Structure formats: C-alpha cells, structure tokens
Length: 227
Image 1 (tube, rainbow, N blue to C red):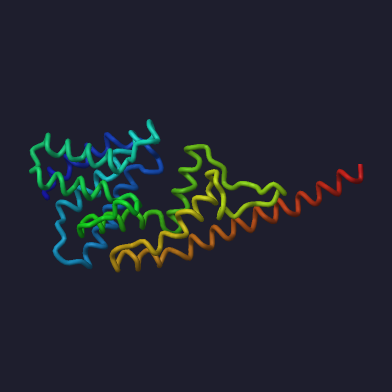
Image 2: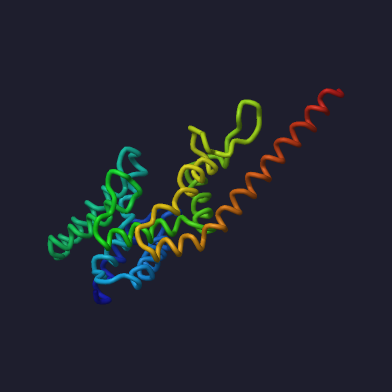
C-alpha cells in the first residue's frame, strides 16, 4: 500500500466518523494495535489489514440512526462498495468486507482469516484497561445512560444481573469478559497487561458509590426520625 492509497482510504474514513467514542483516534489506535499484533504473525496481507482497520467503523452512523442495523454489517457493505467504485479488485474488496463484518463480537460470525482475527483483537484491545473504561464512560454519556442502578432496597447494583443499561452493566456484561476472547497470542498478552487498571477502577468506583449510598441513607434516616 502506498501513501496515495492510504490517503484515499483515510479521507473516506474521516468523512464517516461522527461518534466521539468511536472517533478517528480510535481508528488510528486500532490500526497501530493491529500493526503491533501483526509483527508477531507470519504471512499477513498488510494491504487488507490496513484497509480493514481504517474502514472498520464506517457503519456507525447507520447503527445510530437505526438500532436494528449492525454497524459491522453495514460498514462492510459500505467499504466494499467504496473500494469497488475506486478500482480495487473484487476479491480484495470482499476480503476487506469479511474482516469488517466479523470484527464485532458475535458468536454467530467469528473472524476466519488471519487479518480478520488481527482486526478483531486490535479493536477489542482498545476496550481493555484504563482506555476501555474511559471510552465506555464517554459512550455512556453520549447515549445518556447512568453509571449504575439501584436495587429496590436502595443499595447499589454491581451490574451483574441488571437488565437496564449502565456503565456497571457494561463492565460486567462486556468489559470484564473481554480478556478471554482474543485470537492472537500478542493480542492476548497486550490485553492482559491492561487488565489490572480496569479492575482497579471498577472496584474503586463501586466501593465509593456503595459506601456513599449506604452511609448517606442511614444518616438521612436518622435525621428524619429525629424531626
């Protein structure tokens, strides 16, 4: 891939990115993560990999406008159309489409090619550790979801069995379980190096809000009883 081709792909990506939780810096981090992972693998098609990384989230707008649309499926189709319109071979365009359509965590559509596995790992790595926490909190703010929910007795739920979305639910449902989902050894190693930061943050914030609710409610109860 030469600089002109990269610039073409990058320009199209920049036109499509509107979500601050999945912005251009996320794209670049995924690309850089992918190159780090690919350095430990053999026979990587770097043209397919770089193209897939740059375009993997271009379907986000469609998903935000219609929650029934999967951004990975929509993005793969958009990428394939764009590549074909700009003279890329059909086989290449379809390989990129396959990588993009399997980068989202779905048991029904796991990545198959080496490039797809590297993209998957590179994207998930950006949800690990302190960075993953920061991005999740940013997303929670964008969609106006709460940090946590309360049980009927007023105590703070840790998110494990919540049915309504919140940051704690996202952590228990997704972030906590990511570290067993990597396909490459390098990706897995990089993710595990980040894990402690995420665990420490979640445990700290859960402890802080739980103490605040528990002690504050008791003080309020006593105050109201004495009036």
